[in-house]
Image (tube, rainbow, N blue to C red; front, side, top):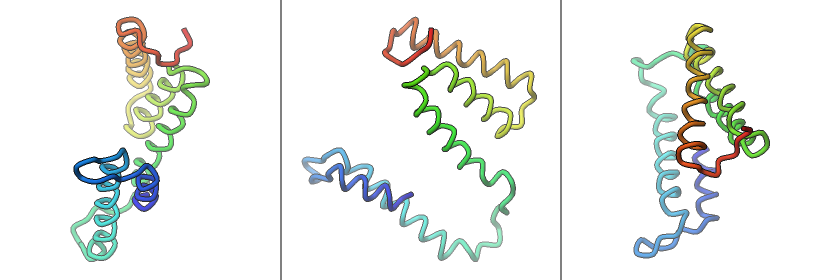
Length: 129
């Protein structure tokens, strides 16, 4: 992912330190990601005091995929349903909450976001209602 981010940031243009273009900061952060990844690959393998891979090791990937799906669905069906599903997946399956608290908090989060961004701030966020 770091290498892909380096390539994309170069495509955006780096500029110079005194006249940066949009890709400069993503490029620097992506280079740090690549360097830290290589460091972990070489040095981190010998660390005996590390967390073992378990079923929950896939949680960050699941979070990233569901967040990307929400972003892709928002322009098509609004934010309410994707946000509700995202909250349910994150709370129940990634967080291990009970169904009752998952459904209650997920609904409250969506209602709060609707109230803040649609009603109070009148943003142009895609919404159903």
